Length: 466
Ligand SMILES: *Cc1c(COP(=O)(O)O)cnc(C)c1O
Image 1 (cartoon, rainbow, N blue to C red):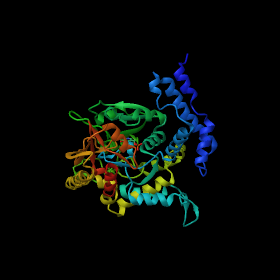
Image 2 (image 1 turned 180 degrees about the horizontal axis):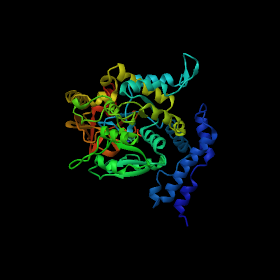
Image 3 (image 1 turned 90 degrees about the vertical axis):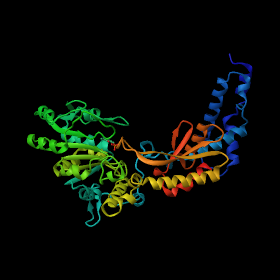
Image 4 (image 1 turned 180 degrees about the vertical axis):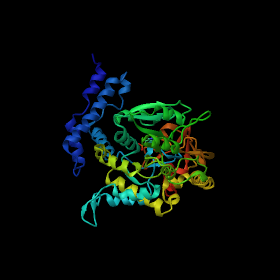
């Protein structure tokens, strides 16, 4: 039984076609199809109807009975929302350099330009010299080989795909020997045991969580062994009473038994960053020199390029990967290849620490960050005096992206608190602004770390906040 007051309010809801026609008369140049307008008004009216049905008393109905004009107005804002792209630019003031939720590595200017150039037709699979069919791998193969010292290289969509392809090619129907200390889970449900079964291989665990010895691998090798796999524990550290077998020793063991050796390196660093206070990470070139048969790494972690899975290694194995039917499903598109090629060219010829944003951010000295934070704070105090409480404090930036979990890079944060109003509403307003501004929330304070904000974005940050 619907109460009379509720009944009256339900009856007052405008007819859909009346609101649609009002909108059309107000915006005769609007090109939205009639069916979309009808659907939108239906949605708006449905929401109102549900609110009316949920109201506990007559008082709660205020604002729920709208005139057709008011519904037409809501239709206008509904359509404005529709026009906003879902994927938008975000100013990352969190201080996490490889922020997975914010797209990991921001690309170099040269990579952006290369993506633009490849957007139309390009020579993705055409040898321009000979006019013959070419290979898409060709565009980055030589660069990857000269940067890593590997005999051969190919690229797929991400490192998870790279691991899947390698396991499937080398070890389908066979056993893969992995240390128990390396059965890692990377965020977003990439787990070594699961990827293994997706690739058609079966897992043979050896050793314990904290200690695995070469003898453990040796004892596990039999006629069913297809691969010895080492996984870099990129997002956690086992400390204390530990030991693991290094790749060079595994390579010798693999040679002795004729079993290939692969390493999933995860991040994959092309240059040594330890002078910037970052924990030592294996360098790609060193691992290749150790003689590993296949090495996989991400394009958008420490390398600082687009999302991609880079596979380096011995020519015989890389050729087999390219022949696998799965390659057709995992191959990267032209835009990715363009960005990756441009990023690799910076390593080869340019100044990676200056031109690759992730490396520039990771190597940015604390004094510069302090100066930038002090300047921003001063500017915000000047312009936002009446509604913002502005401070600075020393804190740390993080590498993120499941890389170097222990690294803490000293930085200076700009600490903000609105003088009045709801803190969470204010943070949401910044997050939904254009551009979106995302910082680090700590209690009722918003912390901004300029390490991950380009200098050219600072003025925009001020505009978002004042
Ligand atoms: C990050 C990571 C992956 C997954 O790489 P994506 O490029 O995100 O697919 C796999 N293995 C290791 C060790 C990693 O660190």
